[in-house]
Amino acid sequence: MELSYPLTPGYVRWVIVELDDFETTKSNGGTVIDILAIHPNSSLDGTVNTHYADETKYKWIRSDVAEIGWVLQDKTNILLDTNKK
Image 1 (cartoon, rainbow, N blue to C red):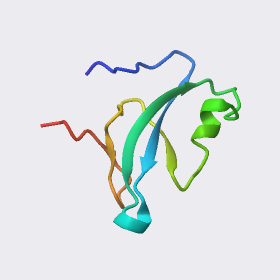
Image 2: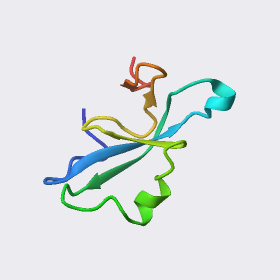
Image 3: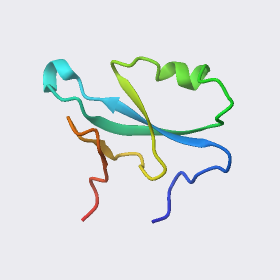
Image 4: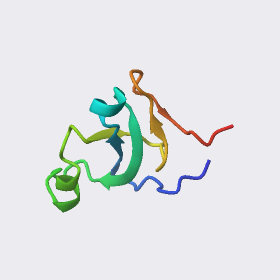
């Protein structure tokens, strides 16, 4: 499988999951909406990272394979490719 956001040597690949609204869905899952490559020695402080800082709306997950559109399963916290047949 070819990644649309390949690994950058020396960087850590993070996917940003936008969490479902628990109040209306009663779900702890969500959908991958962004992928970031962050150098391990850098701070997670910054404009892009501040945008995703609200832990009630976003979850950061380290993943070498997940892509935008993948789903974080409720309760199991497993990232799944919903387009896989």
